[in-house]
Length: 103
Image 1 (cartoon, one colour):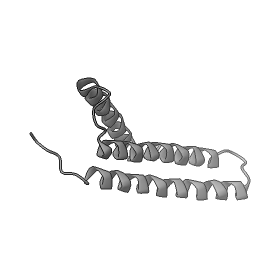
Image 2 (cartoon, one colour; image 1 turned 60 degrees about the vertical axis):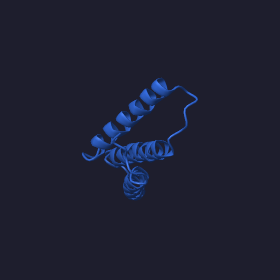
Image 3 (spheres, one colour; image 1 turned 45 degrees about the horizontal axis):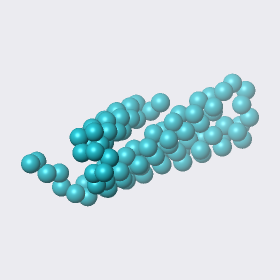
Image 4 (cartoon, one colour; image 1 turned 90 degrees about the vertical axis):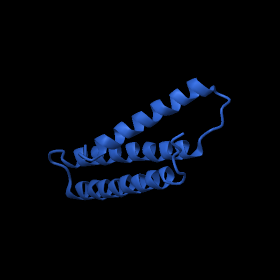
């Protein structure tokens, strides 16, 4: 796994715990915080893409792999790393949409 992915996975976990705590405190009928929902979706995309990139990289390191297969896996890995960056950007955009109240 890429070293920068672990903190993002931790943020995803913390965001999920935050959403669960809000649900417990406010009940299931409380209005949905769109910002939290969108940020969570971006972090889910991030996790999926980072896991796919790691799997492609591991598969490409298989001994006696055909060069064309290794190349295709390399392209897949690069595409998934781009998706990781896009998901991080999407999280940033969702998180900064609304100012956080300190009340």
